[in-house]
Image (cartoon, rainbow, N blue to C red):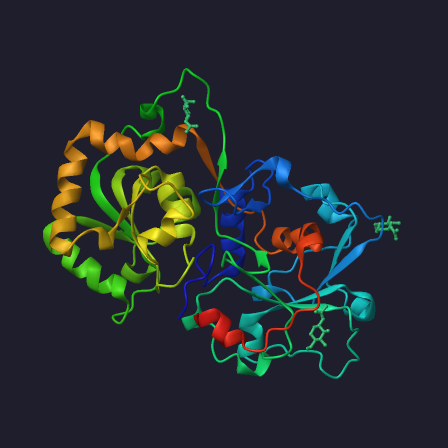
Length: 361
Ligand SMILES: *[C@@H]1O[C@H](CO)[C@@H](O)[C@H](O)[C@H]1NC(C)=O
Ligand SMILES: *[C@@H]1O[C@H](CO)[C@@H](O)[C@H](O)[C@H]1NC(C)=O
Ligand SMILES: *[C@@H]1O[C@H](CO)[C@@H](O)[C@H](O)[C@H]1NC(C)=O
């Protein structure tokens, strides 16, 4: 069992709608610069290819069967302002495709295969795509020497496709931190969990924490599911949100932080990679890390105190005066179009001889 990246995974269509509801209204998002102290994408950094030649990006199949009609016009340009970029799922374009994307899940469960029987153009780049952490990607040794590029949440992927990021913004002089803190707070800590497994570290931490402070738990795992409309309003009534990842890996920070906590207006208590790794993505005073404390008991005591200290609690929202949270408007199409904006900086040729090793490093 794996948490679906972006949305609950059991029913795909409603999930997609939730994704669109959550992310669809965001301003146009842009490509990352890792030069900054943390992960930021800025509008003026979108680099459109200036060659007049079209780049063809072929999705060999759709991830999770979430297909969309790509035939109507020049999608990458219309939606994201990326010119000369043809996104297609038409396999007859294989010989002329510059990039072919393979989503990992369908390869490891045997639903899809690599087109090894077809003559592969020398210049073509095969792109391995996964938003899951290494523990959930299966045995991928059979892909060694076949993939040229990676597309994932990892910051060192060839095509960086994060679950979320911050963009600088200016809110104007009239706003104060208080404007970003939801007024009605009735629960101390909340957690939405769809996949409750005893071996997860997060389960252990939760069990200890709920002995010290009250934790409201929602989600399929406890038969208290929240639909897309209830999710953020519910979380906004909590002082703290447990952004606990299902596994702890470099850069693996999901919608549990970006959407649930940050957009919901609760201070995230994170369990995931190290604090240092989080600080490469978000301001250091925007979250509380489980590892900041010697014990879960101390963490619980800290949260209780913090909720009672208005000023100190508010300091965790200061960053909202300067940054806004973004995510891809469409988690399959948008990152795929963005391949075309990276042509200049791409290493060529490149081959992943040990993809598993890259994942686990
Ligand atoms: C690139 O693709 C667009 C949209 O399909 C098409 O109108 C245009 O003629 C193509 N440009 C070149 C140089 O092939
Ligand atoms: C953050 O925004 C506030 C209010 O707009 C501004 O006064 C402050 O200088 C900004 N801080 C940084 C680090 O940009
Ligand atoms: C892609 O990988 C193959 C090996 O599987 C290699 O022959 C080819 O040159 C690589 N192409 C690019 C564009 O890196």
